[in-house]
Image 1 (cartoon, helix red, strand yellow):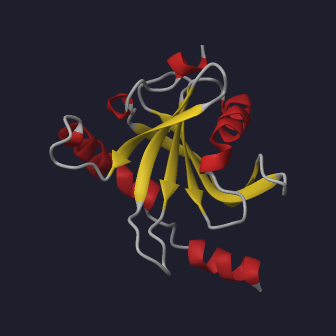
Image 2 (image 1 turned 180 degrees about the horizontal axis):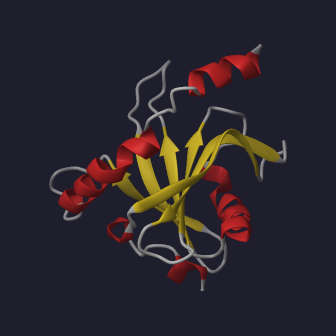
Image 3 (image 1 turned 135 degrees about the horizontal axis):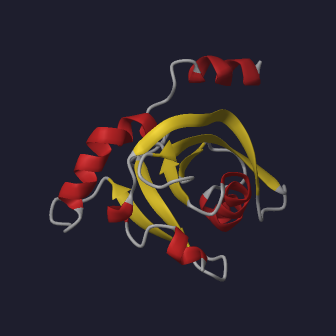
Length: 159
């Protein structure tokens, strides 16, 4: 049942509507010993799905990882925003080691397990590459860019 509510592939990503939540230090339920993790959460309405939402959860490097908690995160957000929810996991490029920034759509199966499909970057020989590039050109910058005030908020939280 849940799987039908999330895109079957990254090709099904909806256009973004209004930003309805921007929480730089969102606490989410985690399966880790800590019981919760911290990530940057942004939620938009979707322009084509009535009562639909697209949520992007950006890894902040806190103890509990977004990847390990994807099923719990989806369940928490679906309770708040409804079952027509698309969840994206954003991993920024690591500052202290090699690696690339990535964006993946998270699909949740009926048993609560998560599966990921790469949205960005995708290789040019990927059959979905052109469509995903168009979606990223139209909406991706809103998801992968940090808000202007984000670094100020991080400094405020540290001090």
